Length: 256
Image 1 (cartoon, rainbow, N blue to C red):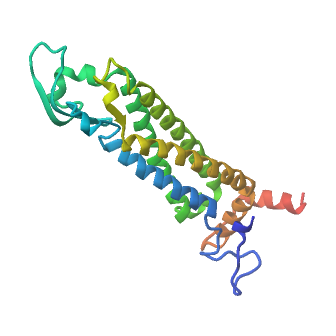
Image 2: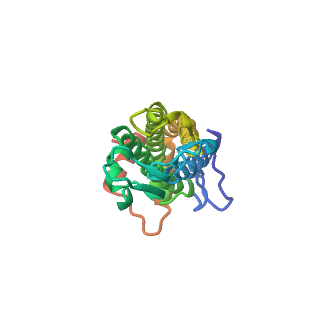
Image 3: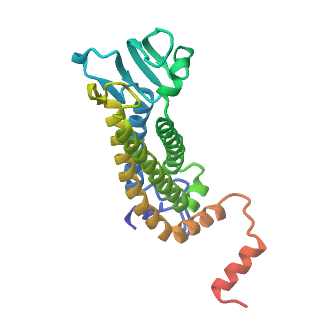
């Protein structure tokens, strides 16, 4: 592969490997990492912002907007609550302010959406850590030897997160206009936070496609990477080849 071509300095032997003479991360891995970071940025905004659905301003509805973790009302009166209490302002779902109507604000399908988005948020953070270590080659020997595994893990995790986000936006979009949830659903429209969630699952799907291709290429190059790690170990001061190494080397040379 063209990304794995190595150049040796003039003061090394044919089998020598300079400290900085090792294959860098491929352009595909870097590009996939950038897309994953953008997806994580959009996911963070969708995760925290309270604009998954909002009311049309001209309707002057008592419901204003909501997110996964927050609702905003203005002089809202819940009809099934026995006391005439008005809810005004923006508060977290789990705050004491919404204690009496929390069961209505947090139906089962919304908790499912919260779970899917939270899982995607955590998984993508882990993927970004793995990709950062892969790109900066830290630790060098471990990354070179197991790069194919790291990229494959990134592929599986981004694909899983994309699936979680797809399920989240599909469930929310399908249930946002239920009449047993927010009153007067025709006054409401899906907001920009929901749109960011849709963009997130698309970006994650694109990153998963890239990592799938890169993991295949890295798997094909795993033997060359392992040999490179062995050459680097042989150049380290105080290197003493093990008996198993002598045996494997003698077998490769055809000795009995």
